[in-house]
Length: 385
Image (cartoon, rainbow, N blue to C red; front, side, top):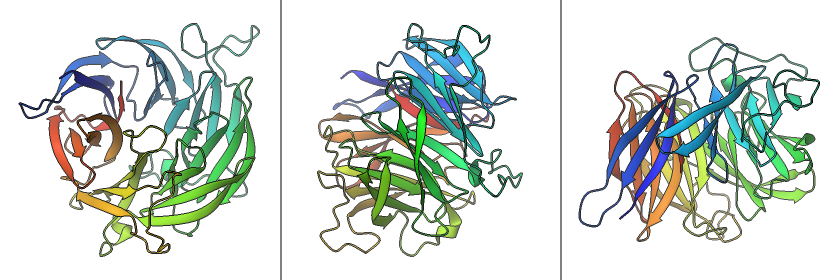
């Protein structure tokens, strides 16, 4: 059985780790680091280009920025170049034309040099890698930053993520502090953005953290960091504009959402553009409070299969698995390959330096394999290669 590989960044060390995950019917699956790349800085978020040749990363440098790496081989990952951002970036994603960043009060669009995959100088008159476009999410009230270790320079009180629609025509920015999703249309020529709407979250205490699109293009899912809900929005008009249609709770009914900070939402990869499952993860705010990974059943169009009941917060729930730690700053999930009907998902934990692979058979989560990064390394997020 061939090995599957993924990359992991860190919150606190300047390395990128290449992992090999082996699945075998004869032996227990195993997971181990096969290469460690010296990186420009701690990289809290990673994004791999569609052709798997370029890695984009948020860089927790001073001043903050983004980095681009060429993926030449599993053991040959080289820095191409880097750029500065106005505030610390929480998230980075890319199309074939541009790289998008959002963090705290601001965001940026950077042009891509298609010959290298790195960042492009916008014009012949420029001497540095300045943004193609600068974004501001601050309106009447200034950006909050309480200075705590969990605020990350304003990420818990501002914009946190940026994700493209499957067709690349729209971008969604989740803003925790302004309790809203900013939607943008994307210029097909250069990747620049035009604001569609600022969509206020369904609840006053939600705190939108990540928006993830269904591959069918009709719905998006929003992970609410403070309320531990995942909301389903229908795309109802160009712009784009959103309509709230469903909301599900991703912690047990008996738990108090104030003891968690939800982390991630993703669709399964095992059924092409009609994924069968929606996955979501939460972290415990206290080290002693364990997190959860939940799975919900999806209809073909992207709505959660609530059995027609609509309104109950855990309709469509298939399983909820308690994680072995709080997750620290992570408990981030990333779906990966499906082997013999079993889907495998990476789970990162920054509390104890754990990187785990979970198995999902449509009924139950199990821990298939784990590895530990020693020396106080805090694994952040993973991307499959």
